[in-house]
Length: 257
Length: 257
Image 1 (cartoon, chains in turn yellow, purple):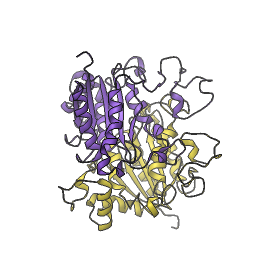
Image 2: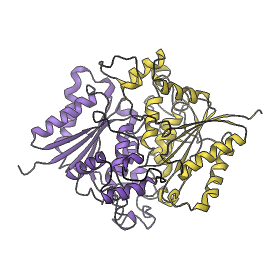
Image 3: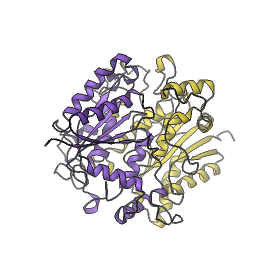
Image 4: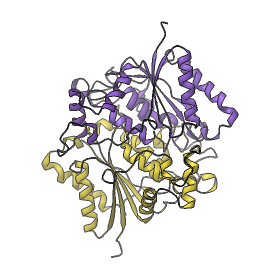
């Protein structure tokens, strides 16, 4: 069928029987039922190593001082990255859409997923692309793909409101949506956040799954977050938002139209 | 001497010969020269496991469904956490000041350090304290201690200005300063950020170390970031900043006076 797409889910939860695990299973089943191809990197099941270090570059002289981004670039160019890193990059290139699914721990992704980003996002692959490395935020090697976060959060939505003490959920996720997904060029959809995840009763799963389903159904049609492209005219030569745009406001929200 | 203090440095860089590694060595030497006691958790050297999972609770039934925060609470209360977790908690309790030192990777801490937080910050130790767990953001088990981030950042300061495309450095670090250090009650100093870290020439180290030294000298005297205490009267019953405070502004900056 013509609308068959390829979807890559990066999933990070230690317990398959958790709400998060059930939602991942639901997403895979639902997307396949729509005719899509799905690949999942279940980081805990894969025993993904989170710590970025010299082992990521097996052919490098281990006695030499490690400059991680330079080693990353060299290994990427020479095809000598650790095989598990290459495999994840291939899944990213294969995908039409990328879903990162995880529980929010300490206002950020779990370490195992951060370690996926730290290691898979090699220089020249995800950053350091183009003139001076400035091909980013709206353009890059992952341009043309869509991305979405699917995040379980323990407390209720009100506790992550724009003026809540925890911080506004969109701001907390901005370093990921903007800094990790939009950076290498992907169009990022509004995050699918499952609040009060710790309090879903046994008979409450269908309602939560329905929320996910609605977002999965529109994965390729919904409007992305209107982040401003770095090289689209809104930023000056220091990559500051030009005077007048958003008044003199600050805060992450100024980076979307 | 009366002003002798205890300082705990949590350090996360894979290369001891890096700028970050040299700065850690400098801090240890300088603080000891002032008569302070220093403990360092060198996470890479310790081969710290980043992935939070059932191994953190060795006496738990491994066939039971893992609810991490409940298992964390039970193991904390019963004294059955993994020994490496207990050791880190003891260092935190021992310290008068805590320094987290790391390179900024993808707008956040390296995975190995995130995994230190995910695992060491047990329920009832760092969260879930007091009535309904609402003893936090300005009070908690680490109250009375000071904390500071020491962060190396590749690009120049201008690229992390308040309206820069990367995001303002204070906002990027807010989930750590506010969400990880202030949450369990520590007084958090303004972050010590070493910009352009990738471009420090061999003869430039002394200038960078001097920046650190000035901050280490005032570790116990400088004014902390004036974050608003959750239970200090500025927030309503939903933990929203009360109407009128900071006008109707949003963004992380509203959470400091």
